[in-house]
Length: 321
Image (cartoon, rainbow, N blue to C red; front, side):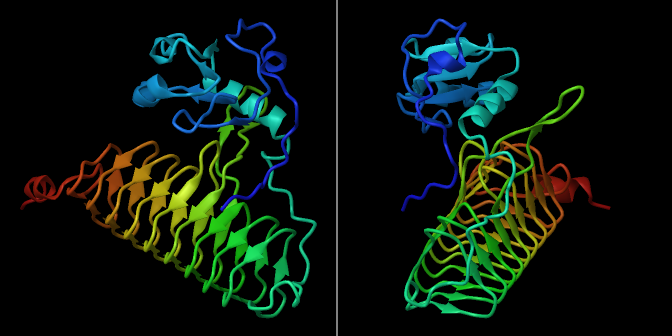
């Protein structure tokens, strides 16, 4: 399923954006995408050696990077060396997607038409945006707002006082009361006089049979997407920052927080009030005890506990009286 959520300026050539850079090829910019998803008419970025394997294989037309990272990139793409990769990326994203750094209210929401949504049940005061698609036998609770271009599958249950924007939702998904899904994440570039807001042009993708309990917040992706795999359960008050990816069959207890761009494997269990730092990779079948602070990658089949989180056996040995 595809949907377009952000207005993009048309016919912008990369030579207009970087007039002083010698380019391998001049092209109309199609999109800004991460290294592993970028195609020949896309701009990408490379700001950490952690992503060198993706950088070597990227198919992007051009890549924004730093002097010390440029040699990891393929020779056939245009390499744009800058002093501050993320600031340059944010500036370009703002030019191409001018309305993606602020979440303006959707002015096109209205009471749903009974003719358009014949097989959907709406409670009181529901508002639906333009081009929204909702599958058969889905129920939408009172005072819920589904903004323009959102896609919702069949047999879903959406609670009351929910706001959904910039999202694609699968079948048989349950979203309980008070959730906020698809809003701009926490991202800015600190400057001397004013913080520069980082545009968020990604979306939220929720796969089939996911359940999201009350008052969860799922930020949309910045350049990539935020996503949740099949049959995963989020307890109350869980927060997913931009670009977080959670695998299938995961169990996330209440008040867990995920910082941006961390990737969680399949069959992962996380206890309440744990915190996951940004840009981490958590393997499959991992168990993280409640209250833990995860600050580095965790391999498959590990059980960890504490702050910083360490293997359970080491934690018990360290805290043995």
